Length: 233
Image 1 (cartoon, rainbow, N blue to C red):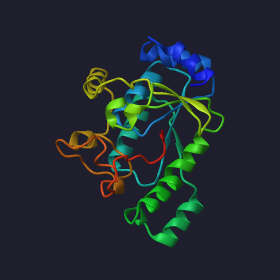
Image 2 (image 1 turned 180 degrees about the horizontal axis):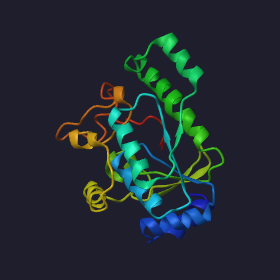
Image 3 (image 1 turned 180 degrees about the vertical axis):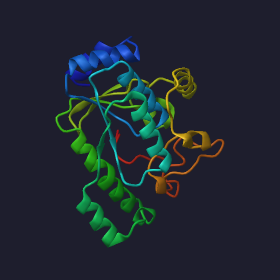
Image 4 (image 1 turned 90 degrees about the vertical axis):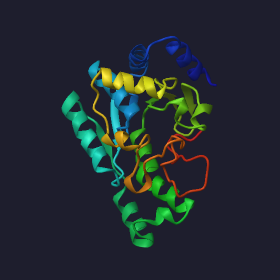
């Protein structure tokens, strides 16, 4: 843990989500962002930021392969809060080369191909979105996967050289839904159809009873840690 991480840990210790976000917005003026994929956790943080007019830039990664339902909740969010959500797209030439050389569904063929697609559609746009940023807010919760239980609420992201803060890291899924319903927060209707984690349409399916939270992501891969690299630990 470096000096800055220790400082931020101290700053947000014992504070509410709103208090923490306000303190970090003041600590990192114009250099703090929140990334949303329009899942229920992200919708809660969008509500905190927009409803309280916090000076935190909100962005999303527009991979070009999202569900129609994701576009629906994206638009509902804009209508509800009337605030900007920046969209970062993959590099056109990189996508064209990938499709030309390997076709539109190469990610099903190997883990390497899937990671290549994630790199082009998500990782590289994320790098652009985080240029000049010093604090990155996310909607990660500890119980979402075993891999994420190894994280901390405040982290130093060595790859991007910035602080990462997960405001609802300790929230349970019941707490998430209770807050969302109490505050009438728009959410992705796929959550009502067994999709706890929603990514690109070709790579996400509903999760059956008793399955892991992220079992529906890249379900054809036989591996325990199903991450695309956005939140590498």
